[in-house]
Image (cartoon, rainbow, N blue to C red; front, top):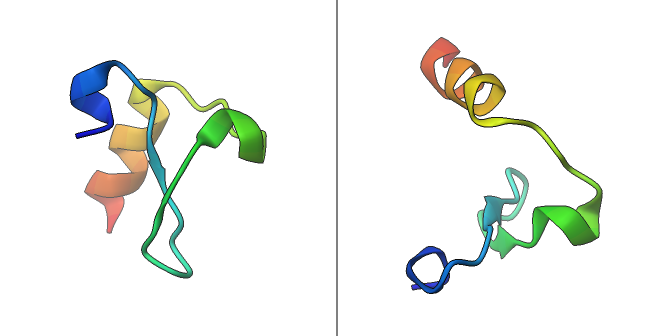
Length: 40
């Protein structure tokens, strides 16, 4: 939904809710995110 509209969407790991990473001050690139997801 949000991503399909071109918006950047993150995930709050505490609540499971979507967040806007820019508002939260998160600027990780794709390879960092992929590494975190694959390490779990």
